[in-house]
Amino acid sequence: MAQRYSQNGWKAETTARNFTRFQACGEGWWAANDDVAVVFTEFIERFNAEVEPVYQKLLDDWSYANRLIRGSSTVVSNHGSGTAIDINATKHPLGTRTFSAKKLKSMRKIKDGITDDAGRPVLRLGADYTGRPDEMHVEINANPAHVKQAANKIRKKREAPTMDLRTKVTLTDAGARNMTVPGYTPRESGQKLSLEYLVLWGGPGMYRILGKVDQLHAENAALAAQIGALSQAIAALATGSAADVAEAFAQGIADMEAAAASVLQNAVAELDLKLVVDDIADEPAQ
Ligand SMILES: [Zn+2]
Image (cartoon, rainbow, N blue to C red; front, side, top):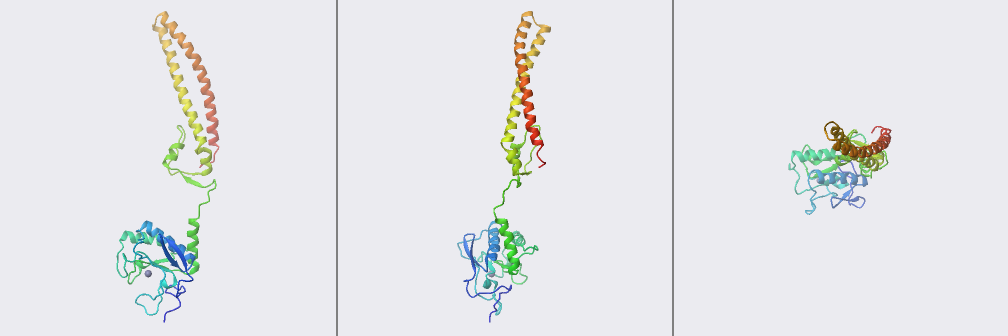
């Protein structure tokens, strides 16, 4: 007679009535409880993304089955307690080795990433059975308390992250480029900054500074042109005729007045820029 518990110690049921129905990769599955459902969902979805697609059309993905372990006359399969699933069964039949080393490695990585609070995996892969391999098969290999710990870790990971201003974000290439101001420490792709810092300095603050920098460049160019005109006037003093000198100075004096105004403007702009940059310097190191 079959035992009341499946091989892994979970209670076997003769129907799926008390089990949890869950959806993963577009298919419906049974699990012993919500925790097992969360753990299996994590495995199935990652298997689908990292190992191979969970192929839906063949209906070869199984979960609950009220039966004994194949080949045993007494031991209830973990499928009987809602703690085992079979994925892509037709591709990976019982007793055969079908997965590449790379896929096996990926499967073990997923399995090793689903752990209880002590870091112990709560799943076992049929592919890792020392005897007859069962590569389609994945089962719970921990008691309900430890599976709950693993499920809670997954639930926490899946919760929408809380985004307060202290949350650190990673600069993208474009973000780093946009935040780099000539003459200041360059921002680097991958650098971590708080949202608060970005709110203060990643947007309008930086654009304000960039605007000032552009303005200064333009004013410096105008000043350079005027200095050029004055230099010509001085050169004419040494070599030119009286008319050339008079003309050059007339132009030069006008230019000089403009240049003086520009120098003043520049000084104001630079002071303004310095005030803005000083504000940044007050920011705590990021
Ligand atoms: Zn199985």
